[in-house]
Image 1 (cartoon, rainbow, N blue to C red):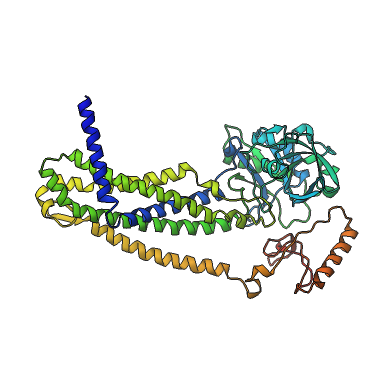
Image 2: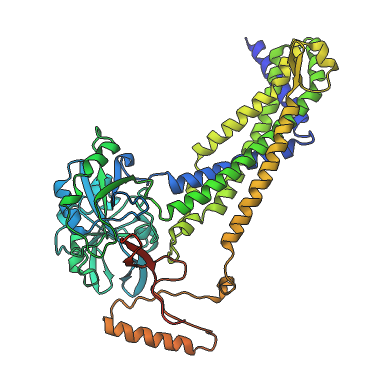
Length: 556
């Protein structure tokens, strides 16, 4: 037994040594491994990034597939934006709905200035009903979370903070529970810290939420007065489906509720339809733009992978054709099919291993290039924390991509064994890897070479069109081509009255314009290209209101 084991280990060492000599130092080996590895890594990174932005539900949520977001719409107008509810509508909806185990509402507002001691920081805030965290199934990291007992009209200012806010703004203080923060002129008490795995369910243009307030406490804050009474679509509603109810059944049940909801004001549509979407579909803003760009990127990277695979297959088949005579001679001298097959598997494994290393490096590099995409599609231009897709490339995704590439490499690598033992005499005389039955013979290498040329031409044409479209999208007017000459600052005089704020901004603008290094200056509600802040309605040709996004800016 030990003798057989010793012989087997000796043969394995011989196979490995021979495989290293015949692969690593073979012309084209490095090019083949780099080509295929780079393509596999790039496709994995592109797919992972697209999945992160478009299909992956938020982490840390219990059974996210059973949670849906509800929006109002109008029958016959599928092009309408996804409108939320007013708070009075949510209160009525909570009473009449019978399709969900739990429902909750939240409102994500513009960044408020948070202060502690003498420091000023921005924080993305969210106002949630007491059922919000129980619906998501979240457990606290420290302290406790907001519950229905905290959510009543005039409730005191109690807040829950994110793990990132606790670490980066409060230094991971162990005594944070019970400490106070100031939001503008109001004081709030920290009651809990969220776990590190929790991710905000909606990454809109404000970015991930950092601080959560009970909805009912809004009436206690001077800056939020009237939020709970206004009849506008300011609130998003979530529902958790029962285990025995499908999405389609819930949608059908929901169509009974719109007539019983309070009316809205200042709307350009008739809210007579309730739509539902999964959390993954509502995770980011500008979803359609992201989907269009990423779809094109996936197509181009897929073509790159196919061209790379064809190139490597052509290399392996050409190498196999040159080695068929060698393998046939070894077979004639007594080498078994198993021994030759093991030798070829060892050689292919070395190539696959080198490809895997290159793929891992390539995946990280491409993921690093694509990592800023969330900032592009969420428009989080005034954020302190980085929001990237680097975490989208996990080991499981890369492993699956590598398994496919390795399997193909191994399959093509062992093909010469079959032709060698079927007709050794012909294998000794043949100059190419041709296979056949009877009089019909064909060359697999020629077929692969033809496919490689076709894929290369298709890839070149597609990449050229994609590159031109991408360059055109980035081509800005001359006055915007030098962003280094444009400075944007956000100023929030939160402790001033409306009249005092007007005087402050006029004085600030005058002083900035007096600076000799400033060519021009103005005031705007939001920065250039950052989206609209309001909407105006006018009668359209079909006698329906036409919503027109608008932004406010001063002269110049």
